[in-house]
Amino acid sequence: MADSIRVVIVDDHSIFRSGLRSDLDDTVTVVGEAADVPSAIAIVADTRPDVVLLDVHLPGGSDGSGTDATGGEEVIRASSTVPTRFLALSVSDAAEDVVRVIRAGARGYITKGSSGVEVSRAAQAVAGGDAVFSPRLAGFVLDAFGAVSGETAAVDDELDRLSTREQEVMRLIARGYAYKEVAAALFISIKTVETHVSAVLRKLQLSSRHELTAWASERRLL
Image (cartoon, rainbow, N blue to C red; front, side):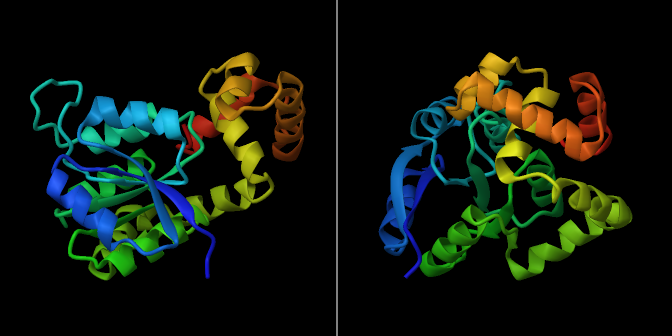
């Protein structure tokens, strides 16, 4: 049996949240729920789950309308300092929704027609670093990113030089975080951050954090 992973369910319908919670198998432990953007951001920061099961059309976004279709994207971007992964779980199978949430940083996208076992397996896969999509949605992602497949492969090769922790540190440093802020976000010491930054610069053959920011920006990693 796979090790249990910790998940947060984010959806504005309480009946869906309770139904999903009861349908997930014992490889998944639900550590929190949220119904809108602000509460989702807060609970992700508080519980730091392995995976967030995230509705795409989530209310409470920055426009204050309560119908913000980019609410899921906002949660992902606001949680960039938290070492968790996001799996979009939505009734929508529109290409634009799939592409937008993947560009925001989600590791997968499945529809709400999925069974509890399928969601559990998808969450486990995402927690392990895999990308997961409902079969008919994978084509949207291939179409959207196929034009830059060569570039993506090159970026993957470069990222493969870095450990998972080094990639986390790299993204935060490239976004302009101070060493102290990175240490606090990842629960490591400042000295450890310095060690990781030195390793990242050496492996990527860069000489400064300014070059690192430019490198990450060019590769759409920010």
